[in-house]
Length: 135
Image 1 (cartoon, rainbow, N blue to C red):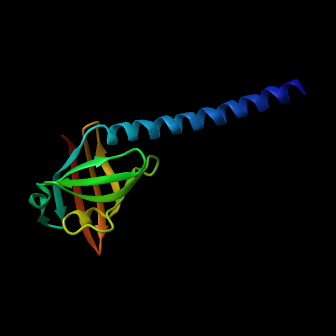
Image 2 (image 1 turned 30 degrees about the horizontal axis):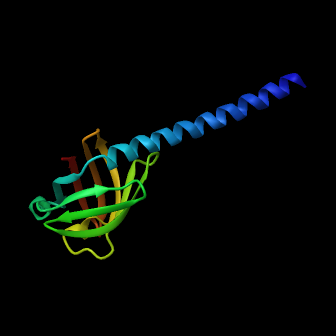
Image 3 (image 1 turned 90 degrees about the vertical axis):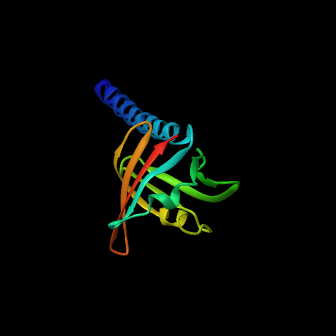
């Protein structure tokens, strides 16, 4: 009976540790994304480089899932969500025009650090490559 008690305690402890680790991973991603503004360092739509279209924009991510595309006194409002385990970021700017609406997708993160994110997605059979950098 005593062994069963300790086994139950150990399983509960391990379960809560796993949750704590997952929460810490999410907090690290949130801190990295929300501290400072970002800009599009490069954006390739298939073989077409449209990076210049994003030149006037910077992006501010917020912990509550909002994101703002800021450009010369205007703001396109959207949402974002990260999935740490799947290594994806989904963004949606429902009322934005091009080029910002080209960011509406689930992006697979292919490389990242504290000050950059490289991601890709496929839209209507065309592979898009995004490279964000922190200002």
